Length: 282
View 1: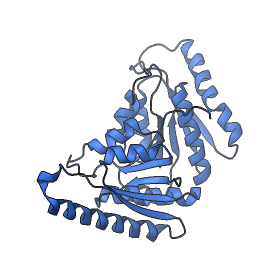
View 2 (view 1 turned 90 degrees about the vertical axis):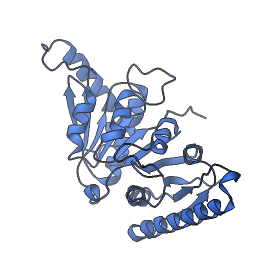
View 3 (view 1 turned 135 degrees about the horizontal axis):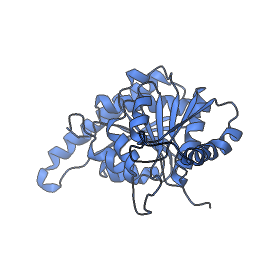
View 4 (view 1 turned 45 degrees about the vertical axis):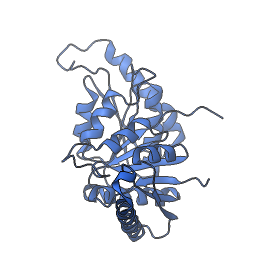
């Protein structure tokens, strides 16, 4: 099977087209192929063959529109379009096993949620085997300006996120802001003690290796004492991307999404990149 590179879930919605535009830019700077995937699901024979035909025709229109959108911004990349008869979460999670990244719009994919994350996006973010980008609003970030912001907490999942963030900064020639919040509780009004020195070392250690690998990336380290979600959201207003691990400190091995990433996937006003699980060495 050919490595699909970057996979985008499309359904004809404005949100999925934002995802296509963002993914096409990523594919171009990475020199990676782009797969536009539309999925058809229906309840079965009782719905009649006519419904299956209608859904297939709609999916074909959706991928054709997505293909046109992708080519309009990035004509030189290898783009493939496909219609799958597997359910959308299952198909996208299956493709994630061999993909560089899966990209989805926050809304769309058949979800009429009026601002709440759709079940497809939520399921893929929880179970994908590669990084997942959740895009909400292409127009605000179309010029690609602003820093990349990454959450650092010393966990293995955070280390994966930091590596992805450095890679994005190198590709897009932008600054990295590395944020470490040393508690999930609001400690902002408590006296500062020796913890500050200890937590500063966690932040410095979290980026040290990657600073050596990507010396061209400008890094700004920020240490705060409370609630990472709050501070990441404040920075998101000016950022071109937020990067977080799929599980953070204290996360149980069976968890599929940590509290910070689970909260941000609903509300981040800029593209959110969630690092996938760390794959074992072959």
